[in-house]
Length: 174
Figure 1 (tube, rainbow, N blue to C red):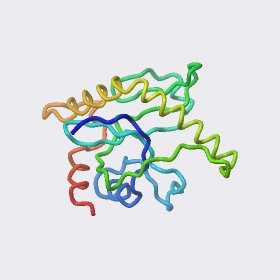
Figure 2: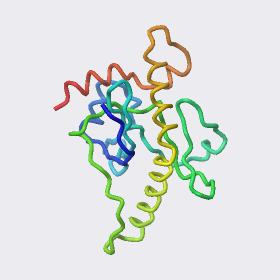
Figure 3: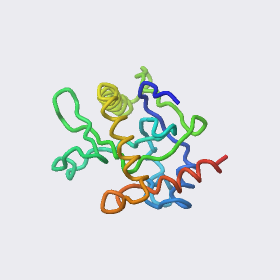
């Protein structure tokens, strides 16, 4: 499987719920019951060990300012060095083409100001990811290999989702 140029995708909501409910309750929820139904699971897709994984983009929070880039976390900065998002590698999920939908970031004249602002933000995030694609893909693969070693334990493994369990759910998902 060949790594493609990075794009932004949303992931099928039913699939996300299955991962959350059957695989690992730390998968970012998109549940209406949790008040998260207006927050789509949006991310970039990378190839790890010949499998597609979606690395979620998250909005920046105050705590992210003090954090350093690490093997399972990466800050997304705009051209001025301002924090505009983060990549949560530890929360990446296995995906396949039929459960992904590419995000349309083209600004249309009928878009509201709020929608235009959001699209400009995700365009900046996507540009950062594309400019740093080699680093992002390498980091995801390194983390995937470390976590999937049989003798890996510790804090890093506890922060990461249970990828083998999630991969099995993906295989059964229709």
